[in-house]
Length: 260
Length: 286
Image 1 (cartoon, chains in turn red, brown):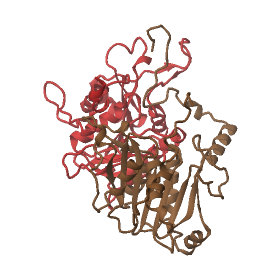
Image 2 (cartoon, rainbow over the protein chains, first blue to last red; image 1 turned 180 degrees about the vertical axis):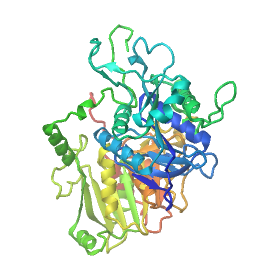
Image 3 (cartoon, rainbow over the protein chains, first blue to last red; image 1 turned 90 degrees about the vertical axis):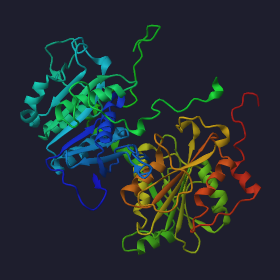
Image 4 (spheres, chains in turn purple, orange; image 1 turned 30 degrees about the vertical axis):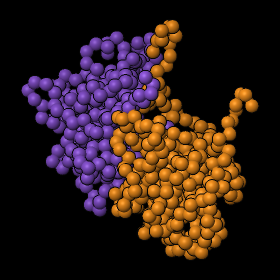
């Protein structure tokens, strides 16, 4: 459940909510980091849940010595009144036995807050692509029926590719078609829940593999920005994203000289 | 993923499980029952001694007055607390938390305290009704039990006037820094505190991108969200067993604390808490 930092409960009605799925390469979370860090969103609360593994650290978006030691937890909510934007950043894996419960709590919060739309940032295993998906852009989208009318035309203008459905029984082409997002964590489940509950949701995902996923995060951020216009984009090139200090040493610390 | 020799290995993502977990949607009654029994088995139970139980019941909101809760997690943190604080004999054992998981198959009896030497979470209180509680945690608390553990403990304590100090061990291998730490710097302390904690912190703060997980993280998360002043002192060491040098690093954390008095132990007492850890287990040659 959402716990505000101070007594005043923020009003989320007509805001856009962005949240990441814990998915392959952690791309959604990295993209959310870029959004929070670049737009300098203010932390307004926590998502208090027993569904995530606990973790704490110091401020991952520190800009000065004064705010460097602000404690950060496993699920926090950031906001911008000007942009009418809310970001829920999730920093720890979901407990396997609490997945359904966690999805329910997210859906319940979205409904009670009255967000105008929810955008789920996600990724899927690149190695699971079929021959068609190997060509062209690795970026995909999904829209829940409640968001089709509002966002559909703009998405069409951008010429985005909808996430393809696959055969329920591979090899049998006339079998039932179903959504398959391998490596997407709760993406499919949460998207299905939102479709069933008539919640306007968009999934924005990309195919990637585990490794250095920073370029994937930038790509996903740029993709999202083409639609939501969060940052100004120069005539040529990509928007200027700020890398947060927490991205330091992603692949380990200093090397002991004694090994050489 | 195909390897050099041609066999195909399944690739594991660091973020997600491979399977779609669609089987959860099609659970039958038996599966639900098994899941419920497993949840029941993994429940965390908090038991107080009769005197403290009475004190809790006597209070209108069924909570215990506590001005300072000290939680020690890990061999050296608990060893420090045993040698420097609990050894003074002015402490009573007043409660314990019992739990079961794959790494902690302790006593299945919820109502009886753990046997001496058994991994446990024991709670001590100063004699003559002091308001300081110490929780020594030597057992492993699984990821799915951390939230429960924290909620159970804090539900029994009055939030007003409460300060929490967590002492925790961590291996130096998990500490990330751009400059490699030389042997002479180790062990060392790093701290994290909640926004409500306004006292002086006696060591440098834990730098990004380092994080804390496990019981210390669960406690700090809870305290941050509920506005309870709390500080964590994490000791990074290259020794995994009980070690007097690592234990002594925690002195800095509690030296200026008015609510408790540190009593430097004699060499014999210190050896008692570190003895046996130099023994080489499973040595092929002995």
